[in-house]
Each structure stands twice: as structure tokens, then as C-alpha cells.
Length: 478
Image 1: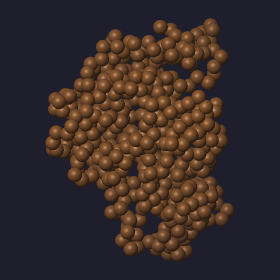
Image 2: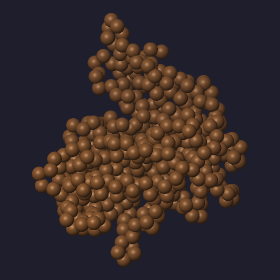
Image 3: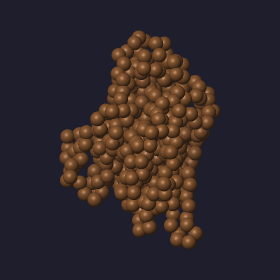
Image 4: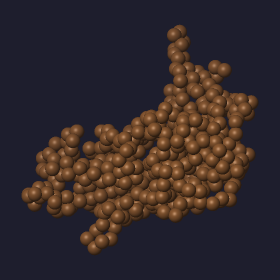
């Protein structure tokens, strides 16, 4: 899964990502008119490192202290982002996406008395128990998503949530039948233009009683949500009737298709992909065409009945979905790199100060004077500053079978910070006589405001080489 670590030099979040193969680089909204010269705050690569909240015996998060143990692996740079709450910062592009989705559900789905059917919850703490994050969602103890290398653990019992679904059971238990949930989530991951260790999700859940699901169907009174003695198949759970599953799936996909059309219009190329989640069955992913590649933007499915039963809603059936707000914003606004969302630069943030959340915005790179002299990245494939590419190769430790790519990605982020644009495993080799294995990674460095020199990049790269040897036990081949 996902990674990042301490930013030893706290490098600019306003760093530009690579021009990927282009299907259509035009953003899906139109550039808004200039709304005046906002105050411009210049960023510097010489800023202080994130305040470390990790002590020898404890970790402090949001005013609470947690004891450290052998599972503690959260990094200061990640903790520094806890509480930023981009989804609640007015006019931030993540906030705009949340508000657009919320506005759609408020207007499209109303209750009997004209009030919104879906309630919204966007202030729940990202610190959750391991039980909330995994067990409440029926994720098995040996499931790979629990791995220490894929998550940020405060200790063996507490962690930073890896998905907003960690709150699903508690909200259903409170009696809610339809709700939206937004928040920041944390995963160790690969390093590229669409992955970051902190991002924002929006969750949706809708439950139906027997009457609610079948009321619009002819002879619906003769149908039931459940069947006795049923069998689990690729298309349904053992407790659900086939009619119920087909209606739930139709309602779910229709709801999400309406949302995507509302956000992007009819022109966006999308596709449904069958997939697996421990907490839904059947399950699906929705992918959109972005910069020449298919990008997954949401996962969804029919909720596992066991989960609903444990939450006290066993008499109902329902669906759930979770989507990434940054990825939707990248497509809608033409933002080329996920790191930009963490920028405090007015040349980025000022472009999203619109009078109305549905107002079109097309992100453009501006120079230090605030002029769009470089290039509208959402409209052209060129890039304003050249990348610098450095390789690193090493022998894997002979006595460590637990080396994981995520460990190396975490180390690179901890040293290079947001100056690192992408890390790719480009070659693997096994020595024919000794059996030793080596790996070679390509690291792309890029600064958006200026051209980097190979000399300054080499300083960072050499620190990565030294630290990989001391912390990961690898042997350099450089």
C-alpha cells in the first residue's frame, strides 16, 4: 500500500509532477476569470522541519498521548499534517470537491418532508483503534492490508485511519440510514503524481428496509431482502435474495453515475471493474480516463450483512462507496500532481477562491509575480522545470526476508520530501552463483519554481544512499 516519512528538509509542497501520456490534458472545467491579486507568499526549501511529536516513550496527536511500542511507525512529517483538515478549509480544492458532492446529494436526494436524505459528517478524529479500522469491517487478522508497512500505527492498538470506513459501524449503530462522511486518511504508499501518504476520502452509505427497496417494483410486496438457505456466489451474499442484490447494485451504480455526470459531464470516459473488498460483496471500482491512463477514483459495493447485523441494523440491506477527493479534483481542475494540494502558496490556493462551489476552475502554473507565464498544465503537456533523474541500486540484505519496497519509499520521502516526484523499481537481479538479489530504483527530482542543479540533488541522493545502508541493511552498488 502507501508510504511517506519525516521531511528532513521540508521541501516545497508546490512541486510539479511529470507530464504523463496524454489522452486529453484539458481540464474538465473552464478557467475562471482572474479575481484580483491575492497576497502572494513565497515558499522556500529552507523552511523548518515539521514539529516532531514523537517522544522516546510516547506519541502526541491532537492533544492526546499514546504509548509507543514495537508497532509504532508514524513519522513526524505525517503527524505534522494531522489537523490540517484540507477538506474543511474554505475554498481549498479538496473542500470544493466535498462541497460539490454534498450539494449534489442534498439536492438530488430528499426525504419525505423535503429535508436532505443524507446527513454529512466531516469532523471525526483520524485517530482510531485497530478494531475500528479493520475488525469492524470484517477484515481478517491475516489480511495484507493490516501490514505495518502499509499503515501508520501509533501502537498496536491505535493508528491513523487508513479509510473513512473505519467510522461506518459507529454511524450505522447510531441509527443513521443514509450519510456522507469526509476526512483525512493515511497510508504508506508508492511515490508518484497520484499517490501521497495523506489524502482525503468521502464515504457514502445508504440502507433500505424491505418496503423502501421494493416499493417501486411491481408486486414488490411479494419480494424480500433475505432468503433462507441461500448460497454465496460471485454475484450475491448467502443471506440476500437475488432480487434484492440486483436492485441494490442498480441503485448504487445509478447513484454514482449521476454523481460523476454531475461533476464532469457526459464526456468523461469511465468504466466499472469488478473487485474485492472484505466489507462489501459484490464489489466494484469506478475508473476514469486521466492523462492517458485509467485511474481508480472510487470503490463501492453491497454491504456485508454481517457488518450491518453487528451494528444493530440486521433487518436492512444497503450499499456503501468511498472516493478520493484529491483524485476527483485532479481530473476536474486539471491539477497534475497530488503534492500540490498541500501547498500554502497563494499562486495555487488563490485560483480556487470562487464565489460559488460549482464555478469552473482550471489550474494553471504561475510565476513568482503571479502571472501565468509558464504553461497551463491542464491544457498542455509541457512542463515548466526539467526533471533530474538519479538511479540507486543495492544488494538486499541476506538475513532480512522482510525488506519491502514501502520501507524504501518511506526512507526516500523522509529525506527528499516533496522534492521527489517519482520513485520506480526499474530492475531486479539475482546473482547466479550466490543467489543474492539486488534492486535498482529510478528517482525523479523536480522543483516547480526553479531548475534544480545536479549538485544539489546529488547531496540529497547521497544521503538516501547512506541512510538506506544504515537503516535498511542494504549494500550499495554505487
